[in-house]
Length: 342
Image: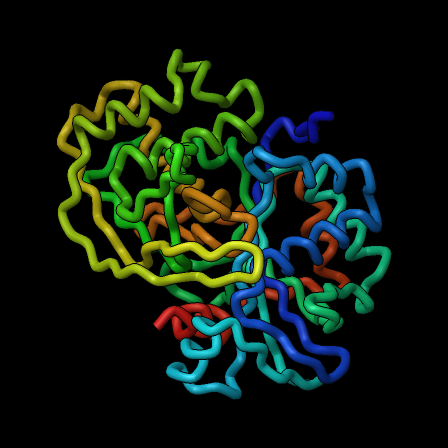
């Protein structure tokens, strides 16, 4: 089965879900696989066939999930300790947590909207046997918010319009990120530095997988590998502030890099490869970068080419959901994400 993109514009959604425990329990902060399982269970309730397709191994997922954020009852030092040791943390009703969800496929978008409409304020995720009620879906920045936002509704068509090449591209990696280079006799080879070729190849592969056919790289006679080769020769790293961090898990543990990096364009700006840099950089907010983006890794965005929110024709249902519990993301939600990364 192919998930199928019925939207000719290629709608993209980046949203924040506010959640609250429905009863006392225990949660592990680094619960990426459990969050993914809870999300797929939510999809299964409204579209079992789509959920089964999403379970298939060895494919790029048309969604990304962050880790669970909040845990304000702990100091930053204590949170880091319990996370590194996979220790569960007690949670109580009334406490507010949140996660970010991005969607890159129209059928999946419709499934989430259908669940929202059918279940309204009873919509919930069950993580580690703790039911978390989704109290708000946040898919638009607060009117007073300035600067880059982690939420937006837009489309591949809108991202593709801006093809002016910039001198610099500054990326922020907000969760551990790594690149898989395939299996070796001793195991999987992962790289822990965001070389420009690796970043833009990851983005180009996501673009070609999920964009409508008329907007893909092949229309410019290009492939993701050709984009990567051009970036290797014409983009340099001009500045970075990165650190590594281990992300433990009961199912997998992985070290990744976090922080910011700036690429400087040294090649000609009038070639086809260069004209794809800005659309691909804008996609990072929705597709993530690298390995295990459906389990909390690779949360990323390009800070100086943020996509503008729009309401493409195929995303009217997103807007209609606002009548139930779709709110603008508040300043405190933007700041919590930043604080959790310190």
